[in-house]
Length: 237
Ligand code: PXP
Image (cartoon, rainbow, N blue to C red; front, side):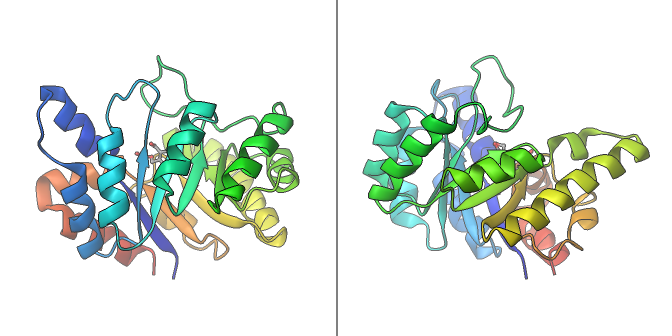
């Protein structure tokens, strides 16, 4: 059965809206684990718009499953990661003006940079995932720079309502998933996945992990966190 990583950034967004201390993403991480989450995902952004370093320290102590820290490939973030020592670092691109992560990292264009930061994180025994667009060449490049896992960006698939584009995007994801599996990379997918579109991906048996945030947090507001996570888990069977 594929694993579910629950991204709790949006809980922190709600907290930051009032600048206080609730709701607490650390408490919610425990509820998500009770609901069946196989991992907790947080993105420490350079502008600290939602998750704070305090959250990461507490999550590292509290999370019983797996802590996946998303971050930009910068020296500042590498230092923080080496201090926190999450179970996985996922390198993502970052633009301050974006509402959410908009695309995958360009491994092909920045091969040397990725090789260096991956080597640094590996020296601290932190495995590294690269969040990439569904491109065969990016998968090959991720393998070359010694990534442990690739997370294939499912945003364009999730965001199209045109059936033909949806099929094209799905094929691109499937091809990358199969190649990554063949290259013995860990295979994750994420971005824009919800209780409806997930069923189009689950036939791809090579996918090991789904990283989902917004749709689970949105449902949790209505039905509670453990139920929202549990309902997503049942779709992964
Ligand atoms: N994977 C990555 C790399 C992301 O940056 C995000 C969004 O923070 C997600 C998965 C989760 O996306 P969503 O909130 O749309 O489920």
